[in-house]
Amino acid sequence: MTTLLAIRGLREKTDASFRRALVAMSVRLGVDPNFITPVMANESGFNPQAVNPYSKATGLIQFMPSTAIRLGTTVDAIGKMSAEEQLVYVEKYYQPYASGIKTPGDSYMAVFMPKYIGQPAETVIATNPSNVYTQNKSFDHTNKGYITVGDVEATSEALYAAALSQPPIVD
Image (cartoon, rainbow, N blue to C red; front, side, top):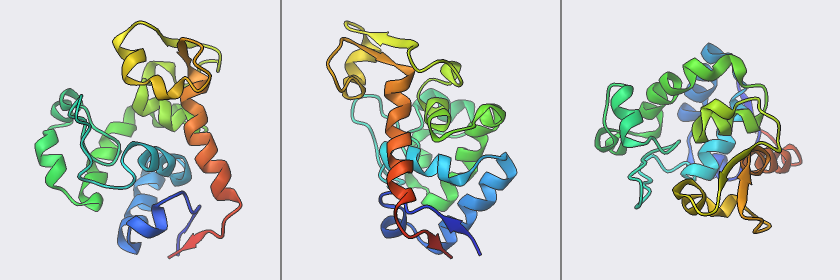
């Protein structure tokens, strides 16, 4: 039996088999699965075929084309996989960062910009004008002209916090 927080979309868009595989993957990584699910909720809405039209990032955690190649696949192949099949690549992706993931925010940072895992919230990641800022302006909720580690981490932290008040998913 597994218990997961009811992160937005997890219950509605995944099945018990996926959720059990997610928990098993998380156990192997030593990372709380409830830290990984907010990333999937925000990046793809748990849609394994989600594709970013600008970067061609694809899948549950939005694998960039170069990242997919580094992991031994392609975004085209990832886009044809089921959510459960993609977990093989999600695990491969997270493996080098797993020991540093202590919060939902760290898990998001592992996908967004791994070099900033564990950095102070006020650390500036991108400023306007830059491609990184322009493509991720939605993290700058107050239009201050820059994005910080805290801005990015807040997305996962908010999804996690909201799920704490919901009945968990028990499979």
